[in-house]
Amino acid sequence: GLPSRLFPSAPSCPAYGSAIQDLRLIPLETCPRRKLDCIVRALRGICECAEEYCGTRDSHSPTSAAIGADDLLPILSYVVLQTGLPQLLSECAALEEFIHEGCLIGEEGYCLTSLQSALSYLESLQ
Image 1 (cartoon, one colour):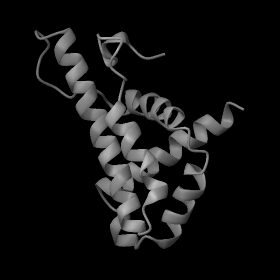
Image 2 (cartoon, one colour):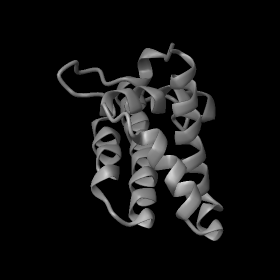
Image 3 (tube, rainbow, N blue to C red):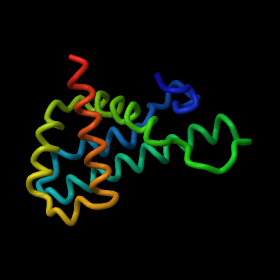
Image 4 (cartoon, one colour):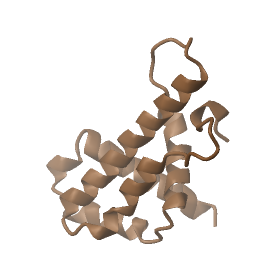
């Protein structure tokens, strides 16, 4: 359900590969703060990839954000599926419990909430 402009033009290039790799690092980290950093890097990677994909497709577009929140959730859901990590739901629940509340304000909180929303969406699909 995403516009083709949000995917790479070269089929050999894995879409959002850096974000997939960042999320795959979560189970390998032992510190909750570092797990949260992986999530933040993944969402930044999604935005960077989307900008790159849009830039290679349409260089005449006005300078604005490549994706909005409406596109982020489906892309993040795709990335989550590509990780093949069934434990991401429990990882997020643990982060919510063990990360200091002050760390969940701003970008970190937005990223964790976005990941939880993508996981909830995928869970609802059965």
